[in-house]
Length: 161
Image 1 (cartoon, rainbow, N blue to C red):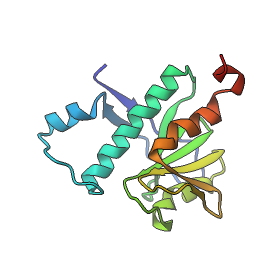
Image 2 (image 1 turned 180 degrees about the vertical axis):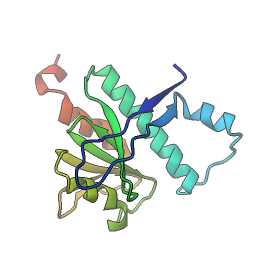
Image 3 (image 1 turned 90 degrees about the horizontal axis):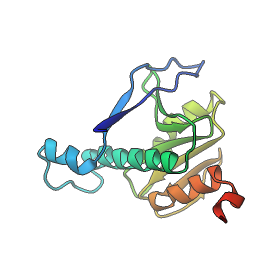
Image 4 (image 1 turned 60 degrees about the vertical axis):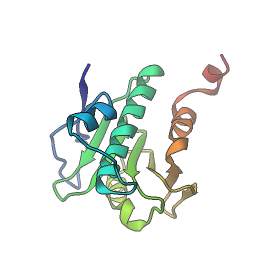
């Protein structure tokens, strides 16, 4: 498979969702080669897009390897709120290529949270500090994403086998 689509999350009622899928290629290196990109500056807009692509690949692999039968989706409203990834109705994930997550990075998650369909909301970033906002949004370093998802989706008894 050369690429894959991530369909839109359409269950929102307060804000109309965009119905187009997002597409990713199977390998970020191939993407960069095809686009004839050289060095990518850390924290640049391009870095942010590639970081999101990397997380998409990690999420897809996690769901597949662990045989988790939940859709991987994203949400974008017609009023330009966006959440990069949603796994089932369990976790909404925003990806930010910054080392300091602030309130401005949480707008999409907060807008989706108003809808009340998702159980947990997280931001995955270069921010080294683990923390939880006053409205219960988890901010995690990207290196801890798979551990977080494992604790959310994989039963303790299955992990002992």
